[in-house]
Amino acid sequence: MHCLLNVAPAMVHSISERTSKHRPETYVPTSNHLPVMTQHYFTLFLILFLSTCVSAQMTPEERPDIRNYDPKTEKVYAVKPWLEGGLGLGGMIVSTTLIDQLRSKDKIDLSELDRDDVPGIDRWAFPASAEQREDAEASSDIFFNTSVLLPLTLFIDKKFRKDWVDITALYIETHALSSLTYAASPMGPLFIDRTRPVAYYEDVDDGLRATGNSRNSFFSGHVSTTAVGTFFFTKVLSDYNPQWSGKQRALAFTLASLPPAFVAVQRVRALKHFPTDTVVGMGVGAFFGIMTPHLHKRWQMKHRTRLSLGGSYHNGTGVGGMTLTF
Image 1 (tube, helix red, strand yellow):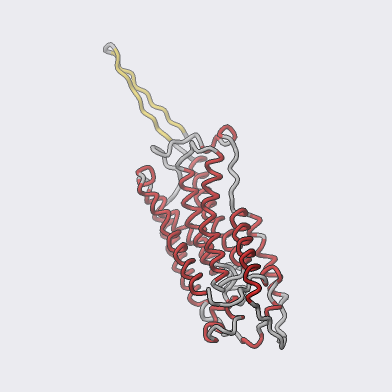
Image 2: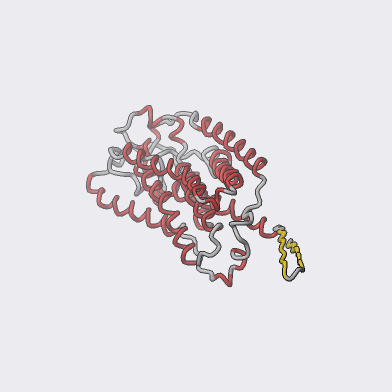
């Protein structure tokens, strides 16, 4: 996860070094770039896929912390649902308000744009044309919306349903942390102006190219939100199945990386973001999707109190007992 988030400082430094001088010649890609672009998109997908595969190869003996509780009878997470859920809702309201304000940035002077000012690590991602933009955006929205609702399917199983209040509050809190990182932190567009790829295409309407929202390329909120949904779902599923082996956990988290990786590629094709925007977005979403429930789980395990009562009756003699674990 750290390797993803470390992309952000490099991006900020690279963006700050761009010059604003206008060059008369404009790069115009041709159809000959299409096969190369296909290879690059596949490479981006592969990088995103591999970089977020969480290693979980430790044996049960090496991870006693995940096997000394019974999720069917005990709480898995230490959550104050009304407090944390309320704060989470408040955080989401604040981030939504800030995101709306981000769309009202100053318009872009299109005459100052030059593709050569884009860092080389991202310059290859310019498609030959903007024709696929709308279809790619629609595809990304489908996976985006589905991932947000994905954790709710956990409640089909009564094992999760008994803790639905805690899990729901935890999910709201996780989204709030991710969205506030996007909308209010130095990593997001509130502090970083980066022009979206669509602004560089003359065949796109100037009104869309020059709008203030086209300054909000870094980082990808769609990808981070998608990653929150899939990685939170997988983390909770894993925590409620302590009998899973390391290979099963590794497979689960690998599958969790696929939807956000797909959304990342589609957002690049839709000219909404550059590749590094999506990599950082995926890292942010995966980080909060995993670490938020994990920290609540660790707290619960370190402060677990359990009362067990038992008894028996034999030959007219009754025996009772109580065990308190804390």
